[in-house]
Image 1 (cartoon, rainbow, N blue to C red):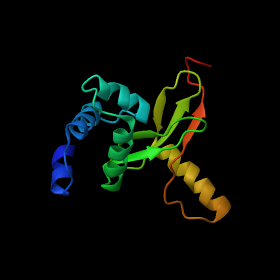
Image 2: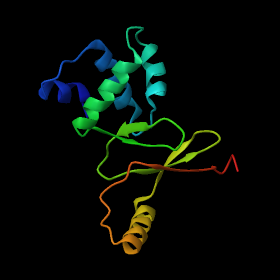
Image 3: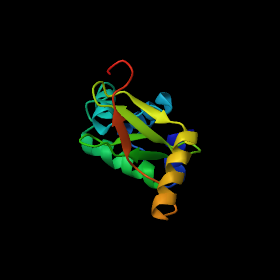
Image 4: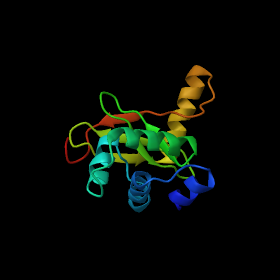
Length: 136
């Protein structure tokens, strides 16, 4: 996926800061970033990048359907490149490690919620939390 080309083709300006942010996201694959963690990486490439630019770029890329975000309880949201399927995550409360939950598991959870509430689940933007194997 060439994020820079997508931005250009969609009529958006491509600044040096946006180029750096997009390059980091592309090279990371499905890695999960908070705005702060991406900001720290981007600052290694340029001191001109500020946190507001990170948030604006996240917002733009999400508008274009390129990235998604999830909310963590008592913590920053996480952003990641959007795949072909919806992602649900679990984060370790101690070390901060974030993992995808299998679509099979989430389908079962959604089925239970739908049955209990009579809602048709569209999406969610939250992250489960707990303690990973190494932090238990």
